[in-house]
Image (cartoon, rainbow, N blue to C red; front, top):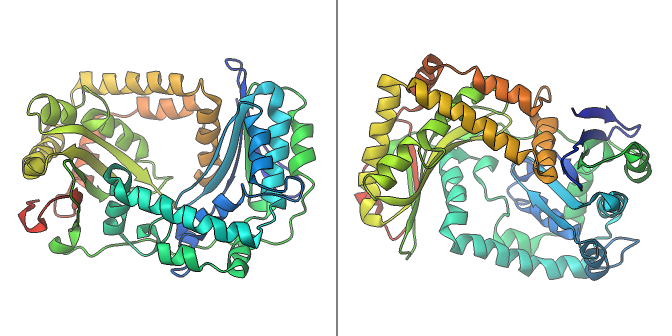
Length: 418
């Protein structure tokens, strides 16, 4: 069971004790990401994430900071998405106080040294180039740019030009707008004891809340619905093509998400799924093939992803459409539904043995869900899904007249038939 409470400075705390591990993960998340940015400041959330590791008043530079974490044998990192930014350290349970100390120091006392800020800009540019050069890593960006207009379609990391031109005053103003203690959620999962609340108060309760953080973001908008505007090919000389086929989906709190999850498990969620068998095993058209969902605060999408040879694109699209038509016309079998539900339970059991996975599981809900649900509560929702619900949802979602296709590879867009 988890415990949720608030410190006097309005920081939200989520505790999840685990008896099956000796590790503890401390994860601090803020509900801010690239969709909160202006065009000029696109990439600044990610830039700030990097700068948090560049030294504090107490730990003067990167080496001092990271060496102190490395000394613990810890796993640590940070991440930026379109709707949230997080920082975490996972250690042996004996070092949880050190994790709290370091994370609070980074988040409250980073110095944002001007020289370090300039030094980090080309590092981020190289990170952006790494993603651009790797189609598997970049295809999501290409697809979301196709699916959405405005901030949800922008690259999380921004542009090279933006990054190189960020001004320190603008960066600090953006940070101040969102990084108040009252906007933080501190999640501690793993082998924790009765002393944990005192430690959290010591390290995260002393910083006073100074302002009311902004909660505003631009509502989503879909890209142009015209057929020619629903295809985007990023021409690149590669031996393998990366492709995503996508459809409008559901926001984070939509009650159809459990149905969508079960449906995607049957369609493309495992090696025995329909798409895997028909596209890879029966026809040899692709190496990787899968389906899934992405959810944001006010929208979402369903996607089918494949890695394949350019000459097989149209063949694969035909098979995908055939499988979607089967879902719409005939639904799923009783055995497929049972297998999907046991698959969910098994995967959830394995995932919940890892304190960092548990922390992420609860952190996302703490930010976006109307109510935090336990793994068992979510499993009950998926186990209640029926064949009729799946068929109805397939009819609602898989409208090929709304399908968008994103491709990276040596492909002529005029030859793609969808």
